[in-house]
Image: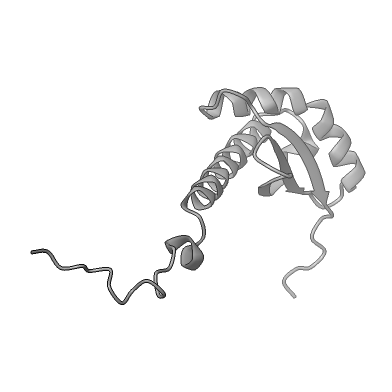
Length: 127
């Protein structure tokens, strides 16, 4: 005769998702982070190859979903001596090239749309 192992546990059974979140949500989040890292590396390398004195000094600070992985916000830091508006205009001029470089660096059916947010140059320094 087999024992009924569920006896006494009916009221205490918990779904694992209530403790850790849905496994599917964690997988999607992990894949988005992975894509953002790949895009950050691809955009950084592509900017290093562009013959533009201003864009050559732009630093890619972060890439984040905006609002999902179909559209990514590339957050860059403007170099000293360059206005954020000037950097944004130059980035828009090479956006197609950057997206093509991202397409060759990632393995996805659809390449995400890139938007750019330009942070002002760092004003702090070592005193």
